[in-house]
Image (cartoon, rainbow, N blue to C red; front, side, top):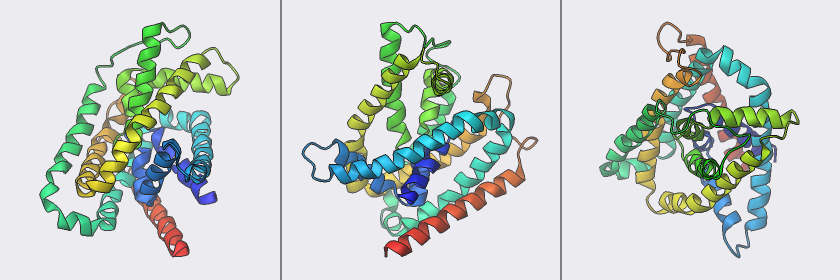
Length: 293
């Protein structure tokens, strides 16, 4: 239970940062397949494993919710004031994760070198998402009095964002940024936590979109991971590589005057800290696997 709480917490912290995916953290910590299977069994009709899946997802969800609250109350200011430090940390963590992902799936990768080009596809997809950030589809999105078309747009934004969020390498936050609803949603969640419920209906519509997105996408993702694992692994590695560019460009999402991560604002200490965090996560993963074994 405590481990599942920690997993959810780690995913939430990653998901709160544009450019970093909670799915990547799940893959690094070695519970990605279990997470995907639990979502599948929860939505599967007549599944005898629904209760167990619900218990697992509930524990994961509590940790995720705690991480979300922490992000809104404390980390949001840290991301605003120390964005280059935080970006350096996540750059180190993400870069160091690549060899660990390869190591855990080395046999499958070696046996299917012909699928290598999926790495290029993964890199291309993430970089294109970053480039589209500058062309938000809707600006000044009003969650107080949205019209019917804005509610439909919000619903499908949530559906697409959660579908991206469960894939390692693609950040759901980035999808919401591209859609132009990330900052309004974060601000609305902050208001709701402070007992201002003016925007709660809009957030409920977004939440329904999230549920719909999971229901629609999870079976497809799970099927591809089970029957086309080598292609998906190469795709995931490509997405993680592409997310390095997303993290470098992440500070520009705060406002148009913030520059990308570069040599003048890069924090080497933060970068090393990210690598240390990754090794800490790997130690936790190996310790957990030994206890299960």
